[in-house]
Length: 300
Image (cartoon, rainbow, N blue to C red; front, side, top):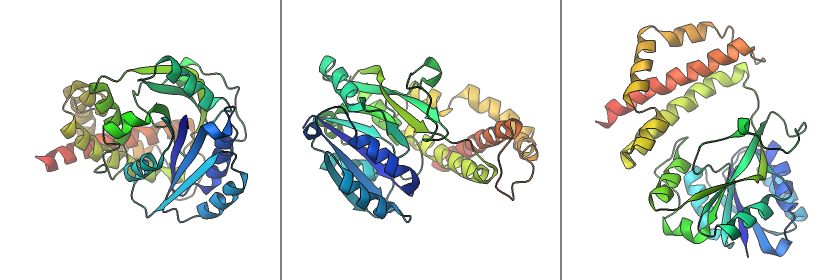
């Protein structure tokens, strides 16, 4: 078998059905690839979605059920079950185009030992998709980003897969990318290995979740820096003197309070204005750097 599409899901039943259908509608022969899904203890209607998907699967479809254990453990379960020579990672909010697997394999044929990074177009809905043309505005500088990336399965197993000590949000794929990069693995980009990435515009009801997620990401950033004390880590995470000093000044001026004041009433779920959206993102950024300092202090 040439390829495995591997994804993990948690509480995304509304999106998962479309994502799985897209995985099954690939241009390569059905016997040449498989889909390996890890359900990370979803409490919603995910089991019903999976049951319907089994009746429509056109390729091998393997499902792993686990108690909610986090993305790293789920990825490793998928890696252990995979049978393809190449493993293609996506998320449960990623809609691959029909030539998705074909393009990943085409790049691997030309670069057998490399990571292949595909393109992702951010969309607010799977029901209103723009033309499938990647442009520089969709560029991501991540070396290994599990929204759309593939790698020889043997290579993933050789580095031990994902680090399961990353139990909170963020950086587990960056850790893998750093280990691959430091091991001499190269990356190539194929803008035709394309997928749509569901990124809805945040609403008032999402603001506290954004802040909470930012704080979790800060804690795992410190964990990442402890594992990889390298300039790439310090630049990516903000753990460098320039960014830390800048945000220390903002904290001294109580900039987070200014951001909150710019958000207005969050007690009802409503669309955020452009000004409020900027304030919400700035508030999450300040929460990240505030938690970063706390996590650094706790790690001493």
